[in-house]
Image (cartoon, rainbow, N blue to C red; front, side, top):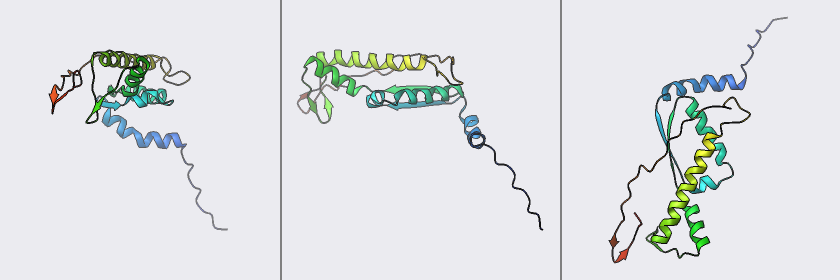
Length: 156
């Protein structure tokens, strides 16, 4: 009987995955990723999973800048207060009452994200990981002013 050479055993899937991803981990270590997501993502039931994935990237030496939106949270607060929402050319006109809702919603979303980042990843090798978080308002907004007869008030 002719003998056929034995097939070498295949490494487990995670080993193949690690070998395939190792060059990317090395290439992006020390780099900065800017990740932007809307307020809709924050409301999603899988948002905590996204934050955990971002924490994993951080543990691989990738610096992260998170930029979040808060449109649904703002609109929810406006509806709760019974405030009128006026849109012109796809932009919400932000009056004084709406501006208070914008500040509340943006602050609430920021705190929620920070809380998820500070929780660590329970029941995983990332449990107890220390992620340093610094937050602030790095965007300087300026009101649009009056365009084509429309006063955009605080919208900018």
